[in-house]
Image (cartoon, rainbow, N blue to C red; front, side, top):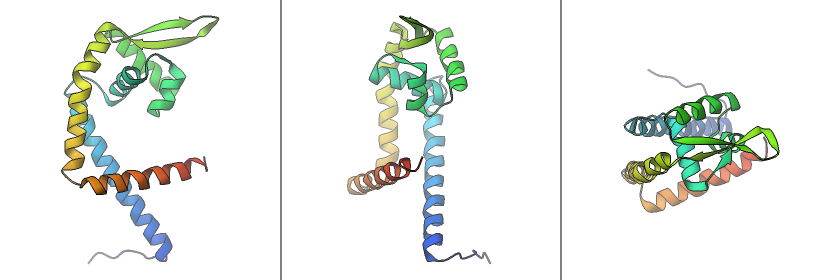
Length: 153
């Protein structure tokens, strides 16, 4: 028989929600990373290509914020994408330390080819589990939670 230690209704409810959120996020991440691997990319590489494809050129620091990555990790990701001819670095005028990263023609073609396929995969995953009303409710609640928690950072 499995027993669960009780900490009080409010704490138990919050812990239960956190565990469910973390497990759902981990499972969704695992499935989407598996799909991204079909394109020969890591999750971090796909994140950079997606950010640049939708938002245009940006500095490494901006890519770090958009993709929740550290500077050192992002440098390695950008280095590898540059070796593959998918992105290019251009030095910022007036600042020898700063570079703007942009997609190359090859990178743009890859983004145009794979993003909609991956987006459809994500849509199929979500819509196979939740109704449109549930998706909207969950999205709204997650936004509310994220905004509220970001004030505490």
